[in-house]
Image (cartoon, rainbow over all chains, first blue to last red; front, side, top):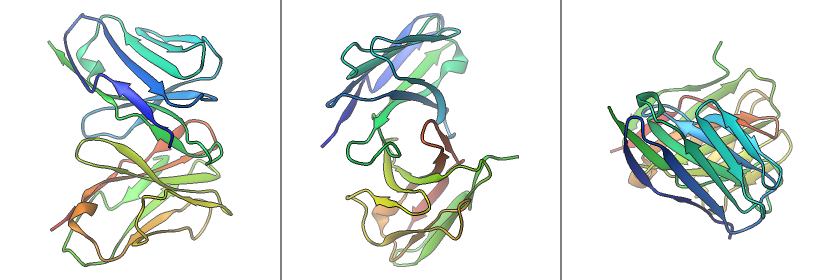
Length: 113
Length: 110
């Protein structure tokens, strides 16, 4: 079945350092979404990428969608303590129309002040 | 106003009991979902429902059943609770794109 793999599972960085999480799908995706879940909170939508090779920025966050639309990355420049949380990528689940998502296992980011 | 709300926030119960979790969305979305997040934070889709079509993830035991009284509500009923059902359950809704999650219900089965 479809798999969405995310690495690393954990990342500890010093405040001010950069952070990157990578997402790989076993199948070609029509789009990919990214979510952030703060400790004790719920997943919150960050962005959706649709086009091959697409790059989008949100302040210090840069999102990329691979040319083959099977991989994606999220890069945070100069991390801050407010970036702490788990970052999930998600792609449409095969055979379930556009309604269901398959989530990666997430990357938990810790920022040391 | 809360876009997606769930009740209760915490649920502690004995093995073998039957329980329900309620979910309501005021976003006018057509599709609602239930997710299970285990202790390792893995987020797994359980169901999606868009008025006429129910899609059930094949790994969900039939002890779990979604019930939708109307478009704005998708409740989760669980029969014969087991220890392994302990997790955080999230409701979500969407119009086909981004999903809006509720605050979650932490279920503990003793």
